[in-house]
Image 1 (cartoon, one colour):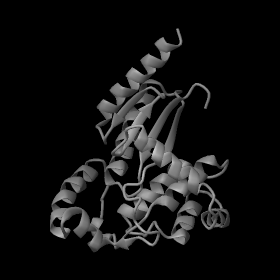
Image 2: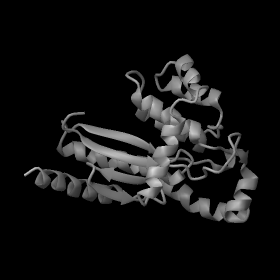
Image 3: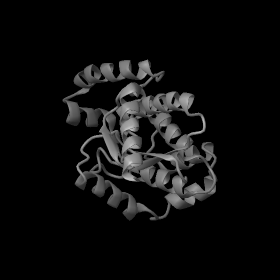
Image 4: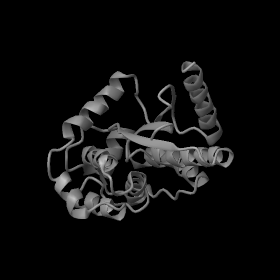
Length: 224
């Protein structure tokens, strides 16, 4: 978009703080548009796999929690805080509904594909992927599930399925993930505003608005 405020978001669809961060970003942008209703904003999503080593078929969620947190009890303590943060932005995160921990490479491929298409809604696709995993307990490592989610976001189901069944964008997504890590990103969500100002974490809308203001000021002074 010519003249638009660009927001680059590095995230993973199995990161609850990324879902919360998406909501806080939306709140920040809504406040910004109250003052500037004609402002164009382009949000672009970039891949980061929290667990790139997981097999393509995923792993049992209980086994995953045992390895990551030392067991479900410790995970429950951690997730209580995440649930509370989710409720604060209107999300009823249901971690108990998740049966398998997926490898998210195909989900990231789908997002990259969706953003390149003239039809469909990439923002709705990202939202649907988060909701499918964290609220509906659906297995987003399954290509048929992913194609169904894409169809709900306005893409052709057959086209999405054909893409997922190919190797298209596999190397590109992996390379983007590697570039993010080599660029110093070690956790998500990670936001880059106007290509100049970076912010790591699911910060409150006021903090995001401060970062946006700094980015826009930098972009303006940089053109002088």
